[in-house]
Image (spheres, rainbow over the protein chains, first blue to last red):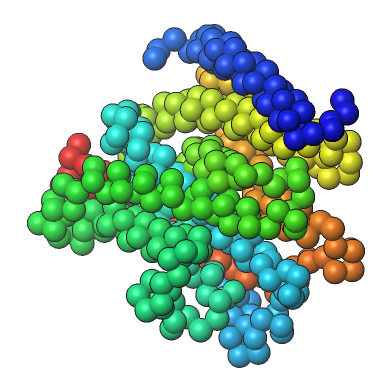
Length: 43
Length: 390
């Protein structure tokens, strides 16, 4: 993506950051499920 | 199990003692050279690279890997996870020795050790991050020493003063966590002063956050790693209580380290996106960055998770070793590899053998003192007079 102004730069980078944040929030929930599963059921 | 607390009457001429002795003699010789002939005689430091291996390894790695002290005591005394209690004393001792050796090793860089108190008591540079780091390290080293003293007082039979210090445990733990939060992050903040010198993949305005979060993973992993080594070499000093809780400590810390590494990976990626540095990933430095992030953050995170799920202690211990190496790699990358990346290779820094020798000397000193203390004081076992008290 070509960026010509500071406005466009922040729109682009912040947009990616928000997407990553959303992904991380969903990811950590799934990762928690994975981590707490298996044979580990004592706590 | 033999009698815990009894160092035994074996010959002192063991392979460990001979090698450690040789390293200490070598270190003392280099120490004399350093303090009589100056930095130029023993190091490759210059105006472009005033901070070398002694800062990158002895200080940055030393402080990060000593984070087990505040993570373990916070887990036990603040979060109330008393099942980790058996890990507190070894972790506090490791942290105390780690910080003490950080201050010791720093003298090689600074010179004139008799002026060590000056920045704190004579001429405070209150606008400097280094002042804040110095103040925090001084205070935290004092806190760690006081936290360690109950074991020493039990060993010396000083019951009254021990009971006074034990009452301070919670206050000391809270103070220790606050101080650690401050200076672990400030060490990262030091590098935010050099945005043009540090490669963009490692430079970030969030470096303080990266350093703090990674120090938690380092501390948790170091407790597992140190416990594993102690199990092999100091098993005779451990009592039933310690051995009973050891597996639970490894599982619990492995679970926590896995979550912290997941979070660390996520915020590193967010830092990358925030600065829009994706295009650097295809360069040589980018590949090295990927090695660090995938091989030493994502991989141990996954191994920890699988190890915890399957209650595979061996896998968790392997993940701890990879994480410890990863923290060392990260601190090396920030302070040495990616620092001054724009300079031609002829002007890049590489440590001399004598610099490496001093770092090996410092680590050896730590191991020898740790062994000396744990074979005498109640670190891996409870003192018979204080069963279930501490």
